[in-house]
Image 1 (tube, rainbow, N blue to C red):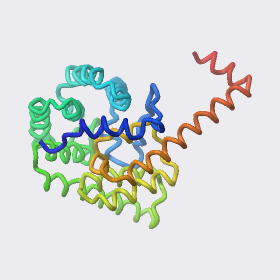
Image 2: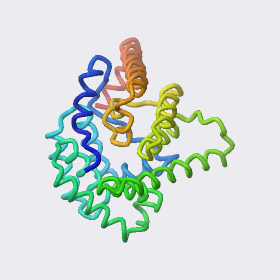
Image 3: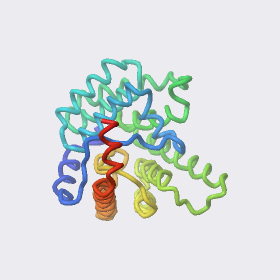
Image 4: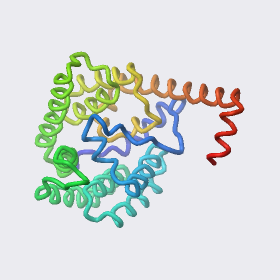
Length: 256
């Protein structure tokens, strides 16, 4: 199998343990500008389970993520996103046979599923389709799909008149697409610029499977450490403001 990201993830925690900031909750990714985010954040109940999987992955609690991934599949047996996360967790746990079985299910689903009104658009399904091809070992097909997604996103930005991309969410997703397309130099540039222009992340970047091809590049971790330091600083500022503002504390008590 092609991914084998378990050792890399474990190593990343050791290399950057001093600067990673992991929190109990994750904000859902911005869905306004890209199909990737919409594809993996759907319907509140399902999104809550997915958020739990992502949180546990980022905290290195893979046995917990394993159980939650089973729940995701159990309650959403028809949903491509369920098999995507199930396969990703299998890879982290080096359950290669199970991972291949789930990638195969996902690939088979997406050969016939071209649209899913009110849940997934064709563009969102394309993201899962690209990952399924990667999972079953059809790497060149996968890279072509991811590259095509990046090209389309960049074309949309140019249509809007933004030649110099400064939207951190768009830059982050371009980094993900180009990374999986095998265009690592371009992906690193997008990733660094996403951090430069204020991308907000609370630890997921270190285990995001889309960025795994960048893990061997020290520039990836350097940008990530800058991101974590900025996140930690923002959290300290928020805590300080809360302590200095009695009304904020009162509001917090009321909201529970």
